[in-house]
Length: 233
Image (tube, rainbow, N blue to C red; front, side, top):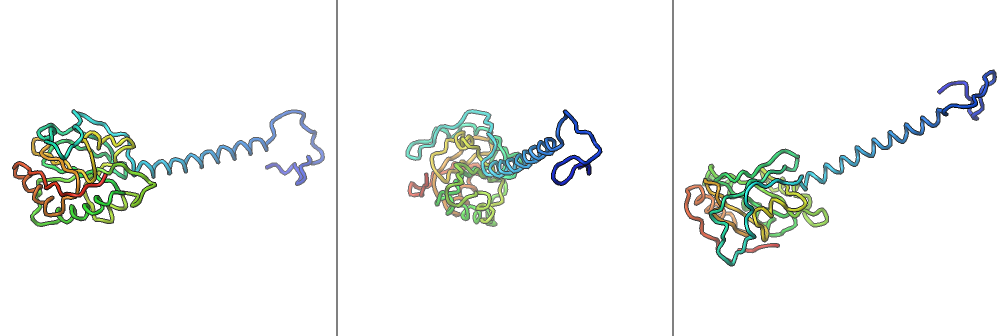
């Protein structure tokens, strides 16, 4: 700032007072507003990134969505081509459910106690020396709610040793809807031809999960688990 102005705001002697012009204080004020707006934009952007890390961007679905799963009836979706779903992971990287198999899709809600029970069982099953290497596992976190327990799902899964590609479903649960979810945990077994081999809702446990994966790898028919499996909604 010019040294021609005194601390009290009076103009220094020997200089005529301007009758018009923009005060430098106005520019200082405008600059402060601009800087504050920029800082606010950065903070807002960070907050948005944090939210989108747990709830993904809108997913895209290519193919016929599956009907809502009804455990008490014959599943008409068995034999149907699995739809392709594209979205993002917790860190924003692309994740695609291609419909190619053999693979198992595991739909999880962080607040569901049955999901919390099942995740370590799946980790144990896939860590077994008997696990068929041709079968892949893909997770989908859905129904995410930061007001409910066990949030965020990314930290929960990391703590359980979950190392599989995981799609963060969008706010409308588009991926879950495309696969006809009806409860948690929800699993879809897809055969080598990309068709649905089995859908289940509820806890399976490590032994059953491993047995189904083995049958899937061999191209054998998959038997529906007993009706006693626990399910959370």
